Image 1 (cartoon, helix red, strand yellow):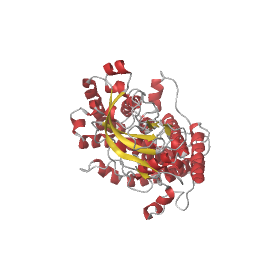
Image 2 (cartoon, rainbow, N blue to C red):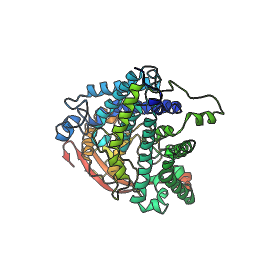
Image 3 (cartoon, helix red, strand yellow):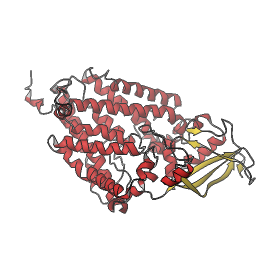
Image 4 (cartoon, one colour):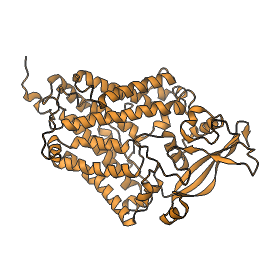
Length: 485
């Protein structure tokens, strides 16, 4: 029995085939980055000899309820197997190898990528407690159902990606307006470029721009996050213009900061608002788009509608949260990290504190002991070193060091870090930029707190320093493996 074409014709988003390519390949590319990051960092941070071992975490009843491949057993070898498998499958999607396969093959493979990463996130504890982890999980699940080339992109899935972008942007805008007066009086960016978790090479340049420009930055941010997202649900070309505005504002954030893949995934997802005819116009009227089928098979129409209904049902808690007086920031309402609440920088730090870790080969009780500083890859340390660009790669230890300097109470990992440095643990030292002891264990370790600020133009010309720092005091007095000195 054949079904009339009109039963599924309404579902065919055949004007969004270029958007589908960008969404699927872009999200897969960020999964690839995330899996490589896990291979490089997870064993030292959370492995068998890590700062917060997964084996210990799995003893808690909460951990045993999480959907993860590691629920029954964890090993560093299994972690690497999971991460490399996810990386290979992600790379195949990025390269376009899997898109010509049937949708009943493509979608399960994409969902395998999603679940492999979800398995890592759900045992990642503090080191994976960032909003963009849940964002990547949600994006992977939703984008998977855009399907392969044998079906048109289901329009309900396209619109759900827009709903994801709306929650991401509008949620961030609302948390700012509710959270900190500096966002309301347009002064937040007097400080933010300097005090953000991990500055990049252009952060100092942005910080030194005139205050009137910073006020315009904040005003533009409010427009981009509180007004523009509503237009994603308007007819074309309005939705495309709204998406373009958000992409441009996110590119400014990419230029001036290191926010892992947060800005990049927002850019990728915003392409759900741009239609093939708009791409044709952008390319001077060239015939672009029309990649793959122009209709949705009935069997897949049923799948897409069922998934859409499922996601809509899950949308109620985050929808309420958007307009709640006590809005949650970066919250998941289920163990699968689907349809989450998002937000960033509800408050702006006015001063930048940094924890500087030092070791000595001398007697630490000797006032003349020579202390040498451990260098981190991303966080400020050496005042003459220009901050590097790492995003979309995520330096998890460096980010946690920023929270530590803010007075984070959830920092049991830091004591273990100091112990690993005293042991000259090779995997831990690989997380750092430089080891002043060349792999040899120091006699003692200490941690001091400093106040950092960007140098002015005159100070930079005179000294060559990027940062100016002043000591605040000891965070951890000298300790050694033989006990506190």
